[in-house]
Image 1 (cartoon, helix red, strand yellow):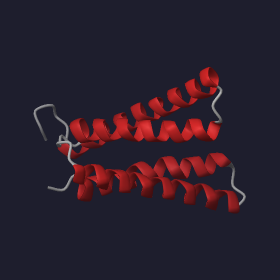
Image 2: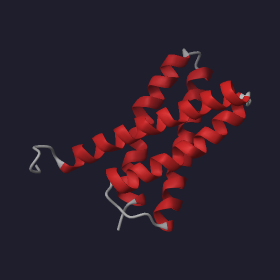
Image 3: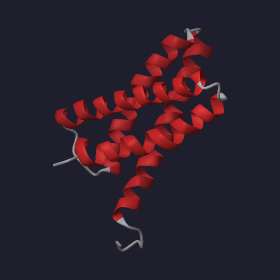
Image 4: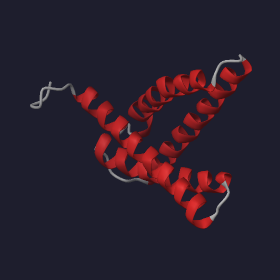
Length: 129
C-alpha cells in the first residue's frame, strides 16, 4: 500500500480506466462534431476520431497512468496494442452477432474484456523498461 491507502496496481488501473473514459469522450465529441458541423460521413468521422482518441490515450496513459516518458518505442508498442484491442473488439462483436446475441451482449463482452487485455499488455510490454 502507498501513503494514499491504495495498492499501486489498483491506482494505475484506475488511472488507466479514467484515461480510457476520457479518450472515449474525445472520440464521441470529434465524431459528433465532424458529422454535425462539417457533414462528414460517419466512417470518416469515426476514423479521424479514432486517431485523435488514440493519441489522447497514449499521452494520458504514458504520462499519467504508467508515469513513463514519451518515446518512439512506447508509441509503436502502444499503437500495436491499440490495434490488437480493435481486432479483439471486432472479433467479440462479430462472434456475438454470429451467435444471434443482442448487440448489448457483444458490447458487454467488449467492455469486460478489451480494457483488461490492453491494460495487461501495456503493463507487461508497452511500458516495460
